[in-house]
Image (cartoon, rainbow, N blue to C red; front, side):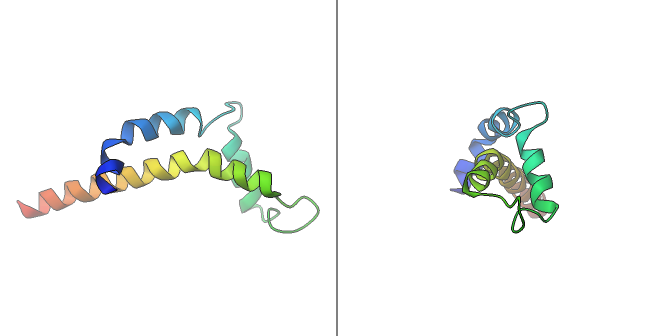
Length: 84
């Protein structure tokens, strides 16, 4: 699993820049994150529905995988540096 995360960082980057930012003006994930951070996502008249949460998952998962891949790369780099 970790090997797969390390090897596929380019794929995660491309997915983040394409699917993660689609549609591009403004990026859909930005609007959904503002909605969640604004506090109206969980209750109220304009609470997020199941399709909105799926949208967050769809547009956010490439970013999560890319960030995890970068963290794994940094961790292995620091471990190699520490052994020397």
